[in-house]
Image 1 (cartoon, helix red, strand yellow):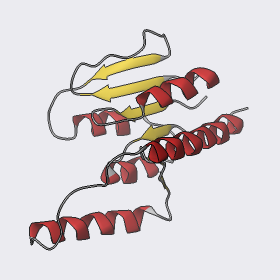
Image 2 (spheres, one colour):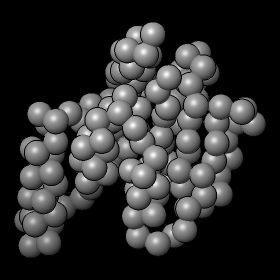
Image 3 (cartoon, helix red, strand yellow):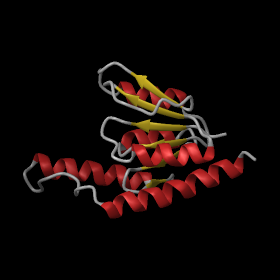
Image 4 (cartoon, one colour):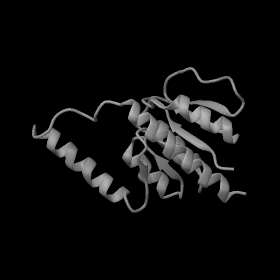
Length: 151
């Protein structure tokens, strides 16, 4: 069965992940560098990593396997997980794929360049109920696809 890895520090959809994972009886690893509350369920493990740069990302990449599911908005982490044939979805329901990751990385670099030179400001748009709904629909579809592959 696939396992789920959550880049948890800024993840706004943890409750949705837990609910879907419980319905499908999947193991969830909540990876973070700070203590947080997670349900007291055998299938949910809180993984505390050091606060060194990319410690959570490195742990996820070291443990994710083909057909596992990673939840993260971190585009470089998504690229690393896709190289391991894991499925990756962002908290707003955006699925990262081999076909889309190159554009995502390029757009990330362009946005950083524009911000550095004062040509663009701000960060991502606020998280909305519509984003939560889109995530839940897409995440559930990915979980069903991944669990069917193992049957």
